[in-house]
Image 1 (cartoon, rainbow, N blue to C red):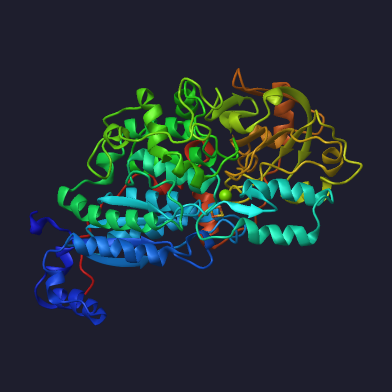
Image 2 (spheres, helix red, strand yellow; image 1 turned 180 degrees about the vertical axis):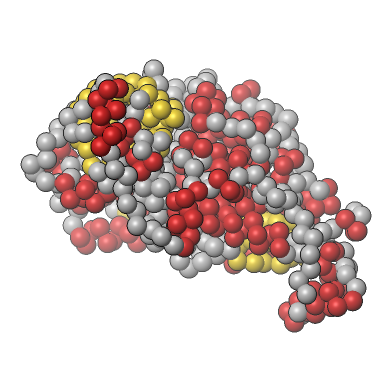
Length: 571
Ligand code: FES
Ligand code: MG
């Protein structure tokens, strides 16, 4: 290692007044002088927060990372960044993903850090940290907090996908208030993030598939002692990565992104994967488009039997062999030589793995389901594309023509959905407008609208639903999401009226509003953009700069990277 090359020496290696200031205040934490003499400084970027319950155990993980950093001769420094919890933040954590990424980027660049460990868990904490880190491009390694143990209730295994089932049962009076409250405690019974293949697990899988974490990062449960072991080993490894100058941009190539898209298909990952991976690609400077997701996942069957596309939970995936066993199965579809944070290739990392339970991880020859991944549908209702997750949809509805029942915004939906007089039947197509990036704002997870009570009572379980919003990675149904351009940006979805015919044809990748172009033109003349009435603060910045869903919903001025150089000193 050439010590003079450590960027932290631009702080701690200085003589005179500047060096005095940079070192002296750090010493109030009880740090010996030799720590400032050329040890790699490892930032531990922590999203611990009691308001992000999925990440509330992260102080323990940070301690394990520090042990590893110290063992390898590094100097660990833990720092907090904005933490985004899915469950408490209103109007939606997604509104703040880009803000958190700015916090991460500037915190890393502005400080004497040579390499960084990102502690990620709840949905948005992974993309926001990876996006921010990409814009600096230091050696970076991700540790996920791990999934919760599966819930146990009335003899059944339960997880976040049951929230949607419970909510419908409660609406129908099949679950009492007492049972509902009891189920809450039974579902979220350990630390960790959602136990199904929701967005958090999808993101943990994404970082492992991208090669940004050590093998098995995705599935080790939060409470399993091996979660601390992988954290400690990650602490050791990041010090070596600094010595090797193994930066993010050396790992995140076009091939790596293609691998991640294929792995996401094989595990039935969240639709949110699309928007986050596009945003990450935009930061690191890899050319990726929404069409790549459809094209690259077409030959990949669903290998993992995990909720919401299947039955099982993340801890089951770990016991069955973990993500390496899934990736070994599909190795012929992957770019085998992409490098990962441990310095080995993806293929080297997975060759030793085995499947221990073929109900949970199936083989390529005999897959759990033939179709997987993300389908991108286009047409006059979504000229720039919309997405649907076939593995979580109803096969019979994948080709469907029905009359639109329109909700102008989320309040309109809540006001009308259970009105017995609402003109809707199981063949209708529910259309929800103004829940996109600008329109909500923040593109909330409301696209998997719950069905009208009167149809639930008839036993209807699924209907075609279309919106410019997102859905929780734990959600399911024949739900068309991320319609671009969104209603608030003047997309054609804004022009849909009650009774219009809409045709969805997933096999042919089309989504058509059967209204003539002349009629749409007339409607467009009368269309008035919704007044969001947001005139200040971050949200104003956000709505003025956020890009559409098919581009990843990053803010235009955040794309790309500024590197790690900072020329001036502070005093
Ligand atoms: Fe945090 Fe699901 S709510 S991961
Ligand atoms: Mg979510």
